[in-house]
Image 1 (cartoon, rainbow, N blue to C red):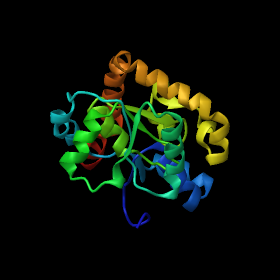
Image 2 (cartoon, rainbow, N blue to C red):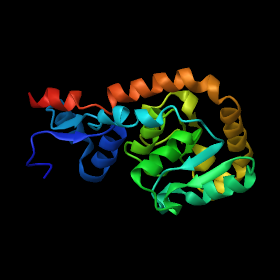
Image 3 (cartoon, helix red, strand yellow):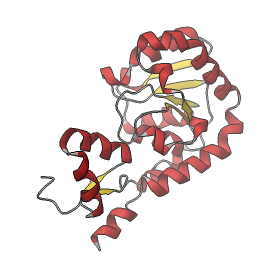
Length: 213
């Protein structure tokens, strides 16, 4: 399929690198990018912001949400352990419940933080949805997150490289969560800037359409 298609669209630089490492000789990647056969476009989801407007002004609660699917690379065990370490907050796993889209977006809109310890992510739609409803994405400085998010939203990758490493850095991660929860309102201006930056660079069809016309 890749060879047959003129333009192959990828979400992020990390996505391109991941695919190239698996399927391409290092010298081929540069030539294919120059030929525009490999194109970084993000993902055409500009409609999300408007869709989520009704949930963007809900009263916030001390909720920390795990919005990801339940899979080994999402490291749910870390989230469960944080819930034990920080009982003053409500830790919610979205897929523990059978939520309608409206119910999920309402939960997202009431949350202050969405948390990621992901070991695989080529874009991260749930974190962008969180931003659209003024929830704070707390993400590791790895994968697609590195190029997408301002430093304010990232914690050091080594803190959650695996569960054993996490236990050594648990106090650091807890302190970061407490700081973001306690200072949530002061984070809002940066949250707005991050939303606009992601919308412009990663959640718009502009680049894809430009290549087609």
